[in-house]
Image (cartoon, rainbow, N blue to C red; front, top):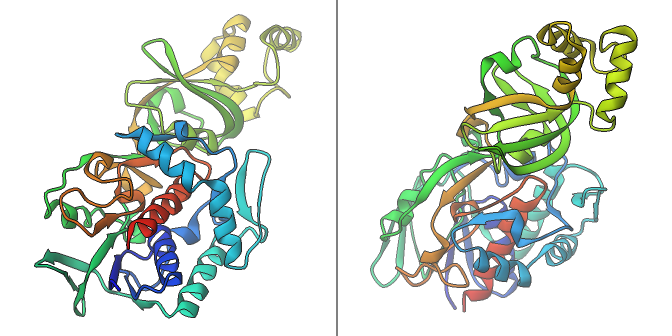
Length: 375
């Protein structure tokens, strides 16, 4: 029976380890940090948004969308929830389909994995940063503290986003040593930078808004949720969702009062000449100043407040990496087409999803495909 080494103790690595150990494979997990699942423990603002019952392949971005669709068809949200509940938890969706543990603690989800790995006798090695991977009929892994041999290797060490969790992009070099290429990397699920004139005076104001991403006057994406103005742009739930689509140079149009028609808004403004009791007072003062006393312009600003995207806060503040190992360089089980028995799972692959549980679902889906493929 093959001896399996899994590089990375995040969600994908732990799922793969559990599934393989349940089948009787001897498994070693090599985690560069001091504990497993650090990024998983912070997901969903610490509440553990693990998947979404409104699962669909069109929520993902990849070089091979059909391969993503086929993988999700075998290992989708229902299968992930069943797997998690086999570990002992109870998971339920909210009104937007986002699935959470009933206790709303992401760290507890990580604990479920840890307990199962211990129960199964999986060899977990912490502070074991893998710096070398070679093949001579079997794999040799070089890591902090020693070496090991393995018949198959699963590279599940994450991408480049959120380097405070140990995902600094270093693992890509292990794949490139076997001839793999990289789809260019970019940060996603991240705060957006905007032209300063659009956010001046608004720092710290949070509001419910409908957000539209426009590129060359065409709508690219639309959603509704919280928008938080920062000193250099915008953050909040709606912005993180939009960041999967927005590019530098795009326009964001914010409807700052999405439940009120513009005619009704104009009438209210006309009664007193301002936005008192209509929007946040601080937001209202800024908008009134920019409208210059023109009621029509003021109403238009509330319903279509424009911002220009100038970039993002980058990988350190992002939750997800776009790009990575092309799916076209792997088979249906995400085994390398360049080196047999080298597999990839999770964020290291060029597949990322929208905000709302889709990226943890991909960790499960890809890890399940890998586990199915190892024989």
